[in-house]
Length: 213
Image (tube, rainbow, N blue to C red; front, top):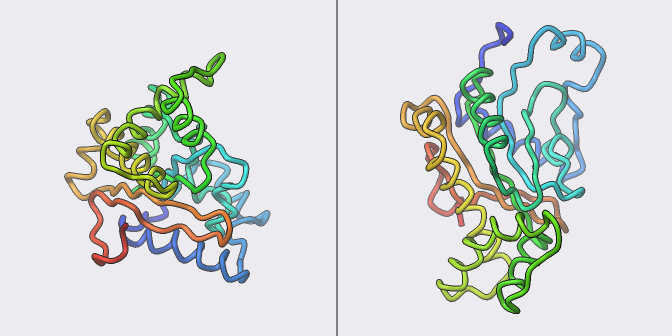
């Protein structure tokens, strides 16, 4: 790591949302994207957040949060499903790089969630390794159905919450960092049409009661 002091989890979250507000308003600053920044971070990285998001091509993290080189440690899979390599990557960001914030980023019109809903409804399976993605999203879809949810955003929110809980349940390193106040985990849902990311669930970070869905 560099000698640059890292922000607190709350400061990191504020930085992230400030960038998203700039993106929504069309007043992007494109910070940390010049040659000077490239040279500065060449010896070591010091990201202020780890972002675990869906691989959807419309969710380019540094663009929608108006950040630059060395700001975000990004891990992405279809439907933000996780395996050991995802957990290890996030643990590396928190325990080795010292990132004070972990974001789980889902979005509306998620193909992985839609495909899983259809598979559950019709009792079908997908070919190849797409089946593995659907199997990992299935618990979220079943939980949403059991709760009586029907809207797309409700299924998306349930899957985001499930991913956050799964992260903390499977990673003792991350859970301990949250317990000790060194890190926070926040689930965000991104709206494709307007570019806004809003909180769904937080762990280790106090937000106004109306901030999280």
